[in-house]
Length: 185
Image (tube, helix red, strand yellow):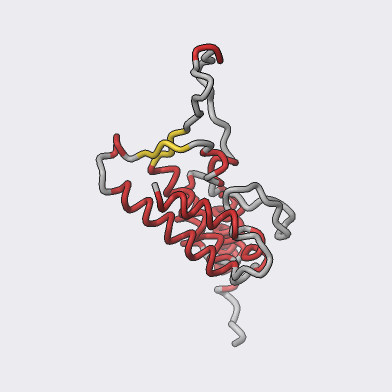
C-alpha cells in the first residue's frame, strides 16, 4: 500500500516546473512495480488493495466506465464513512504497463516526458492533442515500428490491436512488392 501511495505522490509532483520528469516517471514505475510484485506473491483472490478514490489513482480507470450494480441509499451509511474502491492486481499491472510505455515513448516524443509523468490525471498531450491512453500508446509504438512493444502493450492493457495488424499487413505487402526489385543500399 505504501508503494501505491508513493506512486500517487510522484504523480502529483510529476508535472511541476523544475522537476526532472524522467526521474519522477522512473521512480513512479519502480513504485508501481513493487506494488505489482508484492500483490503477485499472494493468492489471486487476495491480490487487491482497498483505496479511497481509485479513479484518481490510476489512469487505467479514466478510460473505463465502471458498472454500478446497485444503489445504496445515503441514509444507510454512517455520516463519517469513506468511500473505498478495490484495485485489483490486473489494474495495477495495466497501470504499470502504461507508465513504462509512456517512459519508453518519451525518448521519441519529449512532450510525453513533460506532460504524462502524472498518469493519474487526464492530461491532454500535445502528441496528436489527445490523452495518451492504451490505444494511443499502441498506436505510437506502431508508428515507431516497435511491433513487439505494441503487441505486448495491447495484450496487457486489453486494447484493440487492429491498427497494428493493418500496419503489419501493409509492411508485408510492401516488402513482398520490393522483393522482385533490386535493393539500393
